[in-house]
Image 1 (cartoon, helix red, strand yellow):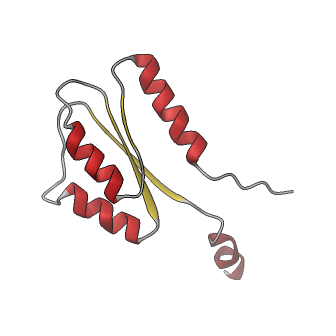
Image 2 (spheres, one colour):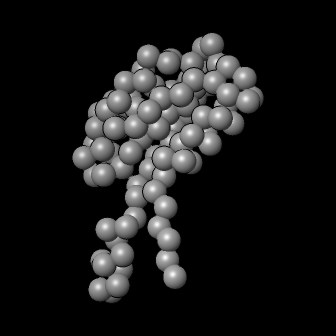
Length: 95
């Protein structure tokens, strides 16, 4: 059990949300949810990929979650967005 707590400082919590025109929040304001996540050391990234997507809302969600918003118009831009998110995740090298 002590090992778990010792290693916990090396863990990173990330949340990536994406949408293509509809945002489902189950009655919870997504900006408030992102603020709560950030308060619990969870970084929130958002990705939109259609013209119907609410980019403004997802930008605010990412900002509230101390993350970044990406909008992809093409398959390649979507791949680039997820690759960029992956590079932002911390790496722990062990022996």
